[in-house]
Image 1: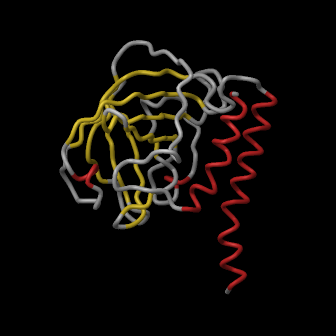
Image 2 (image 1 turned 30 degrees about the horizontal axis):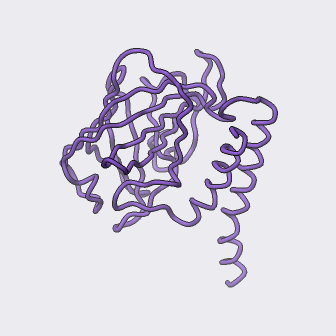
Length: 217
């Protein structure tokens, strides 16, 4: 039993080191400002939260509100469209004058298993995306998803590992071509109010983000 717990605790750290090594390898093979998601489109927008539906136990999700955001859409490997790629949407939520939180979405399925599996897609306007790994909330694990409802409009939803998806708001992005001035997003560094990261998620993700920052320097 003690050995099993030790292995379970060490597994995310080992996987995190593997992801960091792969990130460094990609950076060395393809020098760019970002080793993954090298090119993207940065635009402004807003999240509008309705406060309707089942409560999650997280105030930011359960209460009505309006938040300014900056969002970057990108392709993970950088394959040219229309080739399928892992598509990403990084969203920085403005919570106050000096506080922000980053949400990172990647194309997946929406099923109870496929929501944790990356899925190549051609366009975010036709494919769902999730936060892939769950957050810790006062009432248990919680994941987020966006589903397209127009060219720059997305339904925002939350779910438990064993539940369906509950809509609670909209993400709407401003029209027009966006720029990409090299803004870096890191969901391990800032979270929404009432949410935190499980230690195993940090051990899995943090080394890869550190490797990416080193490659940019």
